[in-house]
Image (cartoon, rainbow, N blue to C red; front, side, top):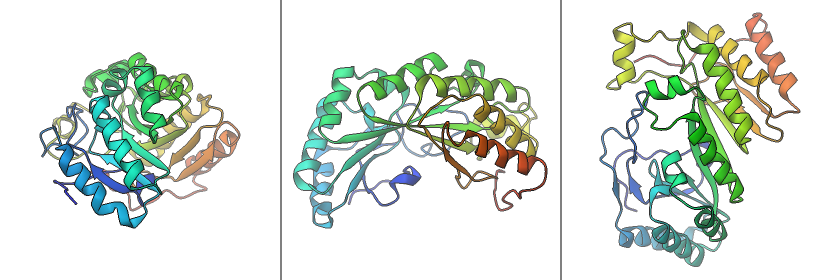
Amino acid sequence: MHYSGDVFRPPSEAYSLILQVTLGCSHNRCAFCYMYKAKKFSIRPLREVFEDIEEAAPYRFRRVFLADGDALILPTETLVQILTRIRKRIPTCQRVGVYGSPNSILRKTPEELETLRKLGLGIVYMGLESGNDAVLKKFDKGFDAASIIQAGQRVKQAGLLLSVTAINGLGGQEMSEAHALDTAKAFTAMKPDYVGMLTLRVYGNTPLAGWVQRGEFKLLDGPLALARENRLLIEHMDCEGTVFRSNHASNYLALAGTLNKDKDRLLAQLDAALEGKRRFRSEVQLGF
């Protein structure tokens, strides 16, 4: 298999065949992110991708994930060739997944996304990070909330599953409430199939690390503040049928349920933690 540098994938793709069809991230400017800083974005030669598919064909994978950070940015014609080859050579594959940025999604017409779905693309993973425009601008996400919502809605309208992440604590102390409320509004407008909450981590060699070291960005003050923000978010979400997860390694408190039916239970679990009746995870590392 042809792999270059670190390869990342969503937790739900743990048992998938990872095909690295692009290198790096087409945006690669988010101030909190370190993942693709060592790579310059490029497109893998189609010949190498086809060779990887041939090598993997005997193993009867049920899922395939197209890496790296924004493989949906590939021209539709190229994705059609890749998906067609997967269908032919790995007929056991039931779903192909991909990271999609708002940019790559909005560059695809609804008809193009529907074509990709018919060829086996099943789920798009997109980062919202925050529904607050000031937070998005500060962290150089590249799009405002309205555009990200539009991208998410386009994925859903094409009949694709939509999985969206946001980052607990991204607003810092100053913008915590606005970040929570506006992110809840964005989720409500998109109604993703899956929501994954992460907790803000500070990685070296990122703009965020410099802001924190210089005192220009004040992180939320520990698990209690993060739990209060998460509670405000969930309280104001109206996403019937959305699978909600806050059980990433970065999260102090593992939460899992389906909205809206499990909302009261999730809020009760957060209240128990805020009242000291439920322990936070102690092994979470959020520092440099």
